[in-house]
Image (cartoon, rainbow, N blue to C red; front, side):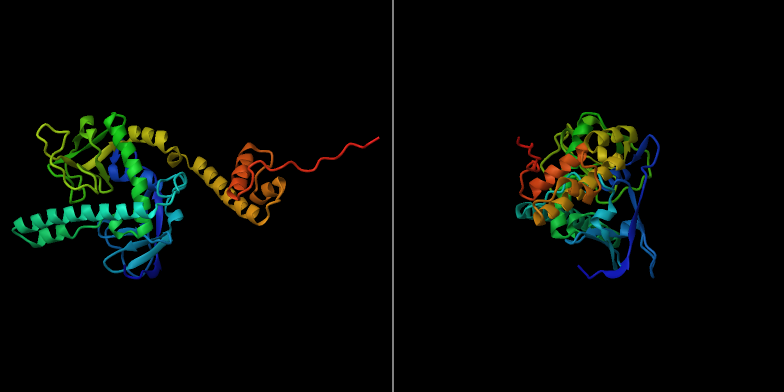
Length: 338
């Protein structure tokens, strides 16, 4: 990856648009970021259109905006998403092991090879050639694991897989409604254009797990899977993907409120973040001062010593420092002997 410049960009996070249906891209952004992100950059050159740039994350947790002209350093990962959002990881901060990392890389390469073969077929049958060549070069897309460093390849892949599995199950049960334009392909190679009126996507379509894409597309097969022999959800066995996908706003928000309530409730998310930071601070203090008194600890992190939340924080911090979660009682005054 070419070294990024010192020119920096930032993200703004907006609200989910109103209306009965919203674009799938906006719905996914709400879950991943906690809002609808847009790039804000004031620098010496003009940013290209959204579909001509990608975002990547370095192993240091710093975002990079990749364009044809330059690579711009961005904010740290904790600054791009609101607490509670999937990419922030407030409820899901486990670290992938080398086996997960290797599997994520293999899956990425398998999908890219399948897309390469598909694009090569398009190029060879195209009369224009140039247009087909441009189509073949339109990967990777935003957040494609191919442009993300090793740690985040596995970590983002793991979080996305968990989320998309839950979304597929909700769609299969009819709890979340989708509409889109059907395409007889295993996956969509071009982003949505929203040029026609979408149609209802039946719940039976989700009898197999599908891949939801930030380009407002639903691919018939997952991003890591090779093309199987048939699609079990159709009588003919042919593949059907969907583009220009929109999701019913109310049903999607109910889904998020069930599985990821912190995404929709920043106050709860910030309270969790405050607790996590307090636990980390006190864990370090207790490692250096194992006899730290509970009252002093409460004062350090700004919590009431007798509050139930601090009692939980105190026990977790002691456990993290390798101490008994229940601190021994202090010395009691001895009654006078007569």
